[in-house]
Image 1: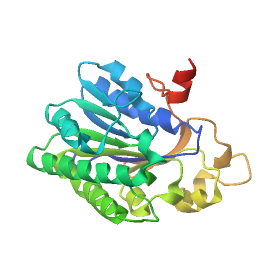
Image 2: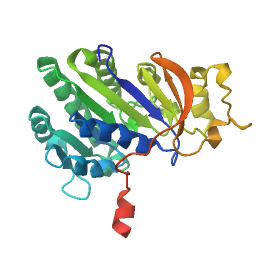
Image 3: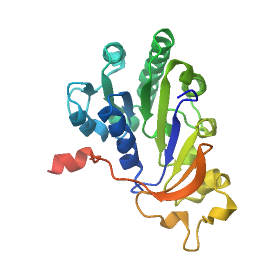
Length: 252
């Protein structure tokens, strides 16, 4: 707790990344923790069912989050609710609008926690949308503030779970700032080049050949890296609440 939790979860589509995110977020909610989930996939709405009286959601097929929704979101945080924020409608169509919302919300959240420190977990799905390596427009301000929150937020109770399909697309200072890293299946060679130095030679993980090829990992199979425990290869647990894509729900 003194060091704060800063967890990175990276893996290709279908590798188990969203399940891992929902597992960590679901455990935090079930244990009475306060969670804020910036959900770029729009898959995490089902987490509300774990504690409907303590979790608020915006979006997920209902009224979508808007630029002026920051005040409502912060009111929920101040009142102690966990908050699920569906950003999926902005990711492809209006990324600049999402940048404005996220920047405004993160500034407000950090300022509030500095005045009223309390343990809480901030989850950011597809973190490369919020802290990209190739920055355009005002994104460099997003990345600067986000990195400051990662490195300084522990003093005010802020803990983080960051997830991405593409480690090569995120600002790598973000990954370096994490103290627990979960590396799931990685197929793209550019992603492998970004993460390979985290794996000790003795672990035997390779890319592109052999039975320890990270490109052939099963769903949920991961390498865990942290200074708190030896680097190891594991099979992650299934979450209590399974993530579901909006289209799958629509087809049902």
